[in-house]
Length: 414
Length: 110
Image 1 (cartoon, rainbow over the protein chains, first blue to last red):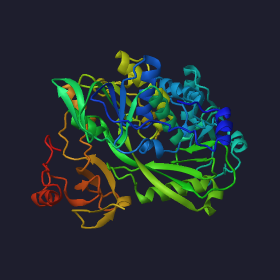
Image 2: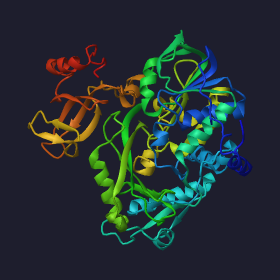
Image 3: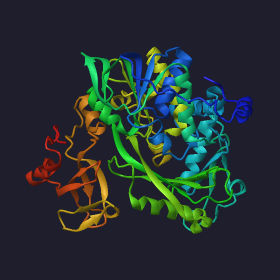
Image 4: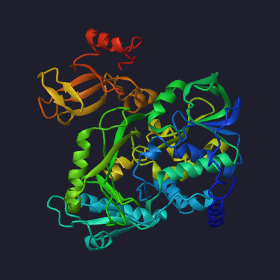
């Protein structure tokens, strides 16, 4: 693979841009692979990438029923942060955030990681206490966050109205090295790196069944024929339940639609990410100038990738109170993704009742930020059978009562 | 916008009037049950890609719990029925089978 560099741009400029290669190959499936990963979203590709990079396993296929990065990887609001209360969450999300810092260099692909800072507004006394507690917990976990007062909030984000009538801004939890990245580039960069290691990325290849010999997985049935494998990694987010059903076990997962929307592009007015959990809306400004807005998830199971209409109104109404300037903006487009919610709102990275099948799911409404850390931990789990980052997130925690209860810690889906 | 007809008061209520209550007809396990049963009752869900039987409460109306049978992919509603039963009535099952001929009422209550 030719490397991307300033020199390559100069060379191609002279040659009329005829020398650029395809970023990843489009091969025919082999009969069998050592490892099959189902799902070519960020988490699946990161799992494959770190299997090759950290563990030397490159006879790997990544199967995708649609196109690469066409699920939640291309549908999220691209926020990256690691200001979690519980130790296992802080560990895996901070691992991911720190990997994002150098991901562009690692992949030789610009993922446009922008550590512009993330602030989570405290708009009730309850939240003030909660975020001070989180800041103290983060100090112990080695995650750099601080609790800041309303004056500092206004200084960092001048378009905020501090004196809102219903929910004044009382302070915020500030993570200066949080931020955003280009979501498609993360998937594309990982795919290019995986393809370069000789892995196969098979798009339009839906898994229709899981082949077992007794309690062991031996392969999968797909729309492009049967493919054998030693180990199977299921990394399919909202559709995890469907795959688990094929393999013959059940998951503590419910799938709901979460939606986001963007405004028309405007001049730069906000260079941080702001999350307002009490009123449930979060916003950042994209490089194109659109205000990227995320809101609440549907309360009931569905697979529509659309979301309930009234959530848009709730989200926008809440944000207009805190950001009055938004009231004149037109919204450009809206979309939904299917998120997989667990009982404690923390992910599952685990072995399963079927030997050789590993599952990585349950990232719920906040999976994008975790992509490199999740891939790192999942690769370690699949290659060695154990991973200090992944082990607290095993399926067994629901039976044993070892919850990683971020739903209580955050007060909302997060 | 999802609209369900409350089987008690007959009002066609939109989803902002209703509170979702998750999968219906769960078999309850409490103190003295095995860990596996208790886990299944609390956490494991069918989460079907298709027909789902679920609980709803007419929160901004009569306040009563009822059941709905709905397709999670097409959002088609097959019908609603009162809460004091162990499964959907025959006419709703028949309506589901017009769309999904092989559909069976899930075992274990739901």
